[in-house]
Image (cartoon, rainbow, N blue to C red; front, top):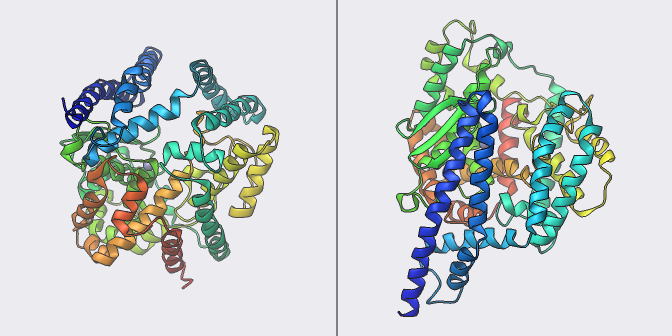
Length: 506
Ligand SMILES: [Zn+2]
């Protein structure tokens, strides 16, 4: 057999091997979907057990001697190495997963998994009872593990880089420091100006709207954005999420609160953005490990683009206003489009990240980014963290949490060991603004939205982003789509223009 033929043969073997890995991962996802949407509470324990077994099995496959053999062979220079972008990406992703984890001793992974499993319950009680002291020892241990893991995984400049890269490939402290410096210098003063104006949002947002009416609004939103219900469905869950099994099976959830109907409307748009990304992938990668979005940041760029950039624009609501009004009927009294647009964009510094508006959102992320970065590189006592948290809220948002439940205990991420995850939320918004600038250079984006031709914009996103799935890294996607690397200026400028206009500051 020639060297090239041997390379191809090995690639085929690797792909066959990954089919089983993919099936395990999808089965785990399906049980997880069931647990979060439909399964009765009594079934949770047994389902959790199954999820644990499937996930351990998939993990073992990703670091087995068999996969190492394939990867070593395919990592040799040509003619053994893969030729197509798809094959290269498969090898790149498997190699990375292998390299990042096989250095960590199995005993430490087990100890860490047990710690995280226990800390979830402790965190829930601590948050409920506003008792940071209960959670602190667990947090301290998790931070200890994260520091050790960063060393095992390896990094060039900053230990936090090792963790960032798990959620956003190639993301570093060096890049994020530049990014957040822009946010700090330009968004914080803008927020201070807006807060001084003291312009309240419309009270209609809290009017009761029945679940049946909200369901009709969900249907309107899904139809408007072009979410394909032949290959998707909408369910309910405590926290909205999207689960893409493959491009022909992409599911989303929402939640209905009678006194917060906008929450569901924008959740459907947000999850719909994630779903379009998953539904629009190319057939070439179907059923492979590339059949999913490339990173948390790029995924969030798609959800935030649809939710905020498009979904909170005047033109979007102009296009659906007649249908929206017909569905909502008299529920909200006499409501003008102007009042509606102002209210869905109203800015108000608040303590809770997941309820934050579009302008203050990155400040919540900046607080977490700065704390995580410090935790990973310095020795800090966990007892000091609530004070550090509160000081940053005072500095950036001008408010101080009255207690730890609405402060440092609010997010699930740290108890789950997800250090390095938060920045991807802010990056998503930044990527979205950069995509918007590139789109605007090619078409009159908001005129298309107003005229009900949103599909023209989706076509662009499909071509530049969606269809590639995980074939290219985020850096390559951004460069191919916009002609440049990530540039925070687009994002900050977008926020300045939008909110100066809404608040009459221009
Ligand atoms: Zn999201």
